[in-house]
Amino acid sequence: MAEVFQLEIVTPEKQEVSDTAEEIQIPGKNGYLGILPGHAPLITELSVGEITYRKGIHTNYLSVACGFAEVLPDKVTILAEAAERPEEIDVNRAREAKRRAEERLKSQDPDIDFERALYALKRADVRLDVAAKKHS
Image (cartoon, rainbow, N blue to C red):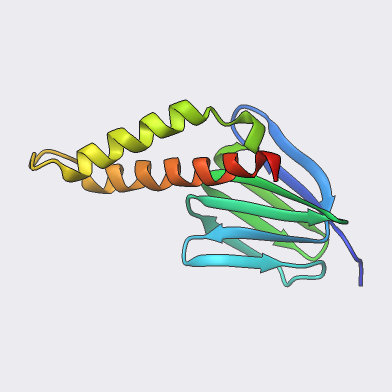
């Protein structure tokens, strides 16, 4: 069995990652999935969360906002609405997005879209968590 697999992470704007990896953790719609070389084929919907992949002694982190992952024994392809490395995240913008989402969730306004506010809050939290790993 191979010790690595090919990893491709693509957004509508660019190819974020084209690398090999020894393992990856991805945020599936129903929880995180751990993928190793030789994994059984599957296609899964992604949720907002953190992608962690390891290559040698290096662990890489990305925030991801929804999409799909195709897992093959020798390749993982992720098509994401958005994906960012820690150094690409604008921390001030993420903090402001979190503040706005929290305000909407506290609001008594019946016209507030609470699902959208929860999504925005989760995305901001993940972006801030991943950004904090920039210097880890």
